[in-house]
Image 1 (cartoon, rainbow, N blue to C red):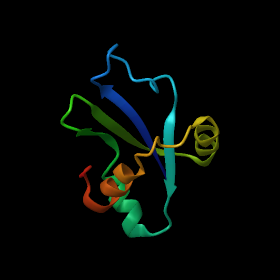
Image 2 (cartoon, rainbow, N blue to C red; image 1 turned 30 degrees about the vertical axis):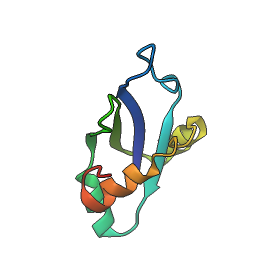
Image 3 (cartoon, rainbow, N blue to C red; image 1 turned 135 degrees about the vertical axis):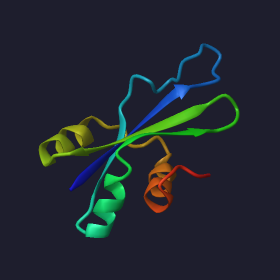
Image 4 (cartoon, helix red, strand yellow; image 1 turned 180 degrees about the vertical axis):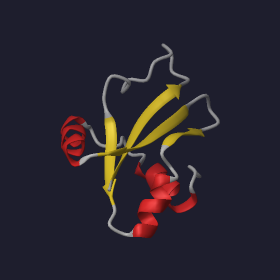
Length: 98
């Protein structure tokens, strides 16, 4: 089973009100064979946000994808912009924690 994690910055505190990476796809795909991890990640499907406290808020959208969509997504993705810790936190804690 494949889970796509897609990053966005819906709120920001930049001078022009835009995130310089908003036109870029930032995505990671995690694949699990363990039943426990599959079930844990299945509960994460949806929208999760994290407030940095300085006017910026990140969001991670989680969805289940098929193998062909995985290949397409990874081909277009520019990585996860250094926020892989958010994915780790979601998997470990069920929420994004600092």
